[in-house]
Figure 1 (cartoon, helix red, strand yellow):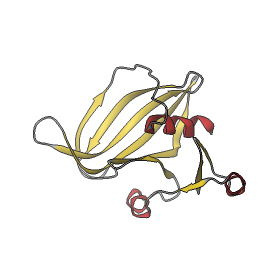
Figure 2 (tube, rainbow, N blue to C red):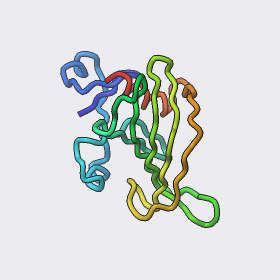
Figure 3 (tube, helix red, strand yellow):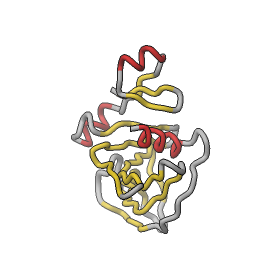
Figure 4 (cartoon, rainbow, N blue to C red):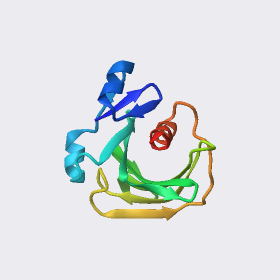
Length: 147
């Protein structure tokens, strides 16, 4: 289980109870589709998408944290031309000391939760930026950098 305590996260049920934290859980059907129940965690969500992190795919690259995330949209998103995508697997780097992150690569999938055919991919310029306070990106960084 994962609990959200304000802008931080904990796996400790005891700490969560003592601090009055809220349970954060991934949609069980999503975890079943990923076939890795217990590894992926829903870190952030809004009315348009959910962001999942697999901690087993997170590691150090020098002073940076490197992590693959899954962005799963509730509805198909338009691409150039007539194609659409509904999920993205994204390779992110985090500089926890400076509170910045950069996206290195994104792979776009036709269906939710990186299912279906790959409809595109892109390698991005490696530029570190700070996410706005309270944004989904900031929540992901806080979760990864706290552990």
